[in-house]
Image (cartoon, rainbow, N blue to C red; front, side, top):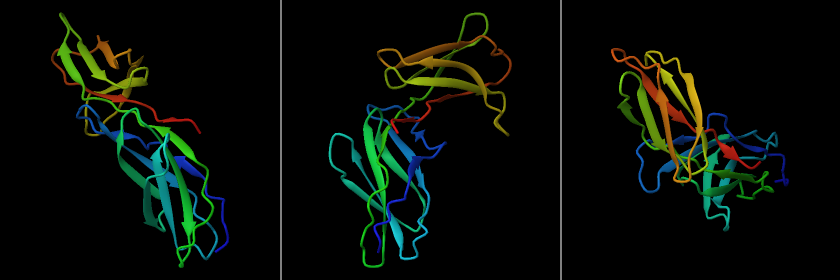
Length: 183
């Protein structure tokens, strides 16, 4: 097999999903995508990844797929990824570009009524992580709208008040942390 090095690895736009149950180390997952090789000798792809401060410790064989979902990433930890193509003899191509990614997580949201009217929305993210809070009045189908943007304080706490929340109506909330990539 030729040393095909044209694979370009990227984090999928909607790639980050994190477990909404907040524990000491929330588990995140990320979806990665790359363009398939046009080399006819390619019989599959393998994704290599690991903590940025160490060697690649994991290899995921994805066959002919051009996407992969990596789960159980630790929030606030930084990972490196690359993809290789391989042939029928298990010969591997040169690696793709190296992607460095920091997993961000959001805790479950805590909601409480504000004296008078409104709703207090609080949650934890990684300290210094930028995020946004969105709301919808229905989940069937949801129509998410931006309530506000925020940044986690030095402890990772975010607290916002939705003064537009009605005492009699229902409103659903979600916190979104955009993916962080150094590439």
